[in-house]
Image 1: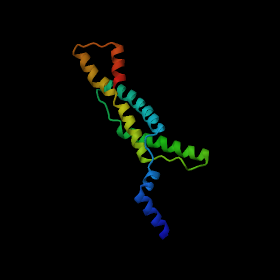
Image 2: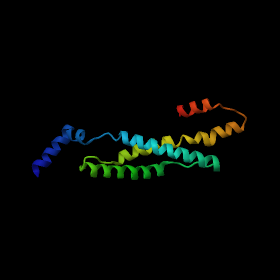
Image 3: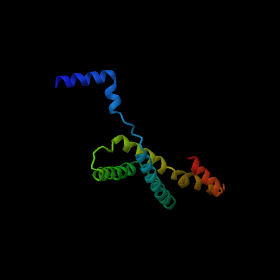
Image 4: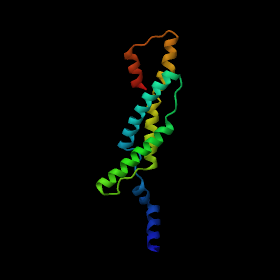
Length: 136
């Protein structure tokens, strides 16, 4: 075991150890799943917000629901392929939560700002609202 610890110390000193273990948490599956969850949360937030005037944060729901979906997907994929090479990490869940929260908070303008501006007498075309949505 002494040889192993010396080898590990040398790898840490040279920086090889860090380069081998670091994997980017930004993955296609976390971004796609975050955007999908975010679009569902945007629609529900918009509906509830326009009915009640209250909008909720999507942080907790997206983190828990995203973890549930992607961890289950990873387990099913590992069983189907009979490997254990695919993992779902905490960092990946953080990226999923960030993407979902960014997409989910898009409804805040339609719930709060736009109705208030219309109430004060401003009018907006469908195209300008659509462009406002794309720019956000």
